Length: 448
Ligand code: NDP
Image 1 (cartoon, protein in one colour):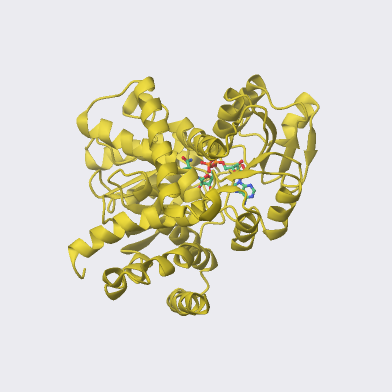
Image 2 (cartoon, helix red, strand yellow):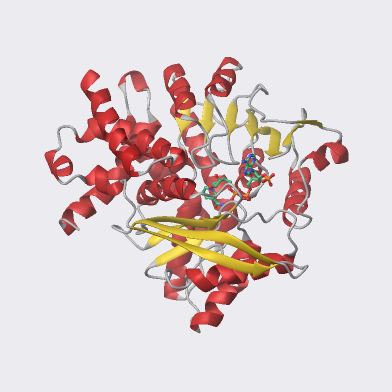
């Protein structure tokens, strides 16, 4: 045990030295290294080829200026990025995030995680991530369009259907993907699957908007089944009110659960009676069409609104679906103390390492983001296949494929994460299952 922690410390010292100040990236690598280093300790092929060290270094990072003009005619400047992390098992694949908190550290953590997540789906996709420190809040449609066009004018040099296929993420939904695809098409005179999350009229896949949130609920469902339990009758606390959160809430309600909370960066709403499907549709319209704040729900329906995060609300299951590091150690403790039996992460890395340790110590069911939210990128992979073959699959087919992919990810976590007494460490299972495929491909390529 002492050796394992010394190995981890040595490894992390190297990562920190090479990537100074990038705390989110360090955190993501540490989460993985803590389970992979013991796994490869008796596997010299991986150790001698320095596979984990190589997987912790992106293939390529590009950063570029994005210049655009606001409605008042002022010239504005932002910084755009694309991190092409690893293309050992397929073209780089991962979302684009527009948020003022975007830094290279955040995108490197997301690209690193994406490599493992995409491998878990069993589809041929490498890992990447991109974005800009642009704040879409309060911007007009025209301003968003000009920003997206300028962003794509640079990004076009680095992407392509067999090279790198971005998708949406925080601040990038159907509207932004439409503007970027339009600019790509105009610049290249090509119509292809360079982006996923496209509108249905121009090559988008059915079920892509729903896939991440639905998939995270399927993972929750599969975990509960291992204990002979189900979602029906469970009280759920969910954070966020964007794409992932609203679709997770929808599927929880479909399965007979009760959704007590949703949130945004202003605070959370607590509806004691449970958010109904009609009210959820009202929230989707509020967010997508009116670009409003979640606090308006409290005024409209007489629910409670509180500043901060919802983790002190007693619940059976919790689904963080907003952003990274939104559950700290004491919040994880609070969830457990209040009786939470399962956490399924819709957002990427929403729980800090201290919080994850609390889940593991309490032996509650815990699905880490790279497994729980992989349904989104899996459906993006299916969108790529449809585009390449110039076909479109029906909703029932996609729905079944998504459900099967999530079950397979659950099974892979159980295979590599099973511990004594029927307990499954899903974090360990997801890391090892995701690692193996990429690592074996890298071994096959030799020293490159
Ligand atoms: P959206 O932009 O649709 O929604 C994000 C939501 O989270 C909003 O309610 C937003 O509130 C809230 N939020 C964002 N940043 C913060 C913050 N710093 N503090 C509090 N609340 C915040 O994004 P998505 O739903 O697409 O993404 C949510 C998470 O899911 C992210 O971690 C993303 O990486 C992950 N994910 C998304 C996938 C997808 O398919 N979209 C796929 C896999 C993972 P506000 O409006 O106030 O900013």
